Image (tube, rainbow, N blue to C red; front, side):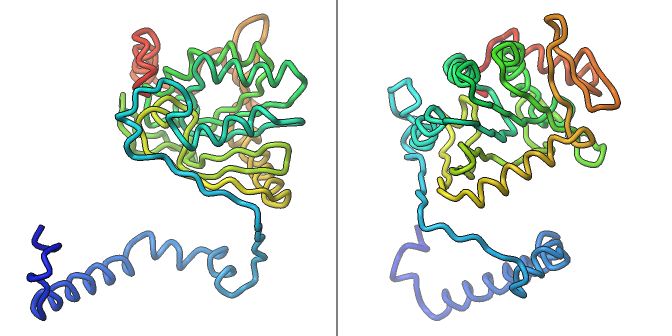
Length: 280
């Protein structure tokens, strides 16, 4: 509270603040993140103006009310981000592309996606594989719907660990998932990019935000990224063979979550059987 008291703002206090800010600035300038940006060829090209930037005048920023955790409504409208995305996804005429690290669609979300697929719309989803997911509980929630989604015509891919590494998984922690992007593309015309995962936690608890943009160019770029990330050397495609789930990457095929150890499988199984979906 002292920092908010006008009487505490004197020359000594300002000098103390300036010193702290200089230290923070130096720390940020010498951080690994800053060093990574400086060494990134794409960033350098952007600064030099060598990378074309696509501008769109049709966009909408959406953000959740932080007070949503106190609301009693038990529907998607509790999340303003979810309420903005749902009708756009529902109105798709050709195809829907979804990238979600933590993908737990629930009954209603699964039904919506299946209805779109059965109506002839292409529904394509990329999420983390169990071995690449840093939150095993989330994968347990997702796996409850995986077979139903495939039976309903949803195209599923699960991303492999980055460069062959394995995410440091815990039951509810977060430390190193391969996939972080949260985005979707509708009809190759509209995109959403933000913090919202297609899971209950983003809908009911987390304060999420994002941007909806009308741009065929940006939508095509996002879908090109999706196509690249779902190549066999980056992801496993989930299919159904004689009623059983299979994972393949054009070289290998698996009849259960690829490359996942017993501990990770147990954590996912425990969440699935305990039905902790509302907390995921």
